[in-house]
Image (cartoon, rainbow, N blue to C red; front, top):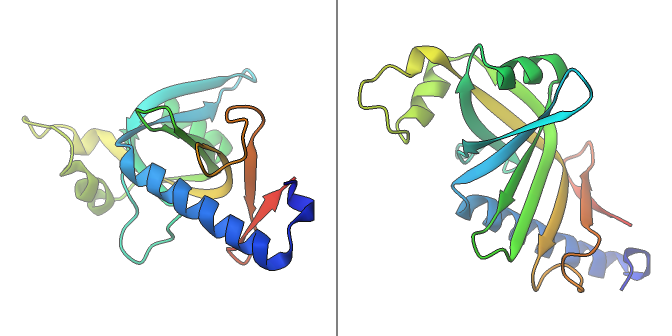
Length: 169
């Protein structure tokens, strides 16, 4: 059913269902792709370990660590944006979280996440910064949740200034 034909309550229920499935997918996937805009108009993608948000933090904020002087950090500083792309190993769920990206050069933020990273020599901390991506848009393909035929088109949610989400036609 096209979005425009859903009643307010039905659309709210559909949005809640989509958000819950997207959140579940992001929580279940340990690594995601971070995509940043390059200076030449292209894009660069790299796999990163995804870290969940802290308790009480915006549920649509996601974190990863990167080298403080690497290309990824430079592109994020230049644009202030990134896309995190998650896909379950089954191939049945894909979520792209698009939003503002901020370099957080704070030892405590790095250390909190570094505990989950294999670093037997303990040399990584000084080389890394944390990156927080705060979602403004979600693009979803979730088998059994998004409209069939699965894999054609997209389901897209935009975040409003008050933090709520709206389904985009």
